[in-house]
Image (tube, rainbow, N blue to C red):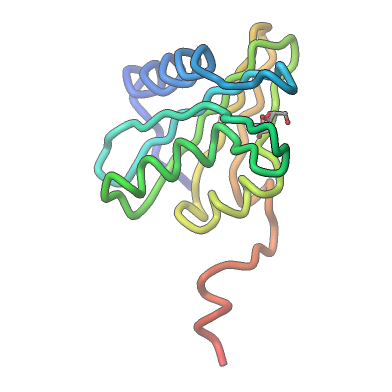
Length: 139
Ligand code: THU
């Protein structure tokens, strides 16, 4: 069970995800997403979705935030907050679940939107029986 976060940290993650969504580059889908991750050092990293005219190259907000954290020298993430400016909350896509598993198999996931709906879950619930680094180490 993940340790409960201070309300200050929860606010920083939520604000970070909301602000990041404003920087989304989503001219094709018009679906803006912001994400904030809490890394092992205690720092918060944010990201937005970045689309491309070659659609398959679109990068989700969650992966932008996680890759930014890893590029800054982090090794683990413990919490992911996703924000969409929509009436219902959005959970991370399958590809992002796999990437969260790589760096935060025990991570908590909180999905926020512009209504009161929130989804508070865990990576384990979103991606049960995940394939990950451990499988590559077993013979
Ligand atoms: N998207 C995210 O950023 N995160 C998700 O978890 C779901 C989808 C983005 C990708 C694309 O830019 C747009 O939302 C529509 O799929």
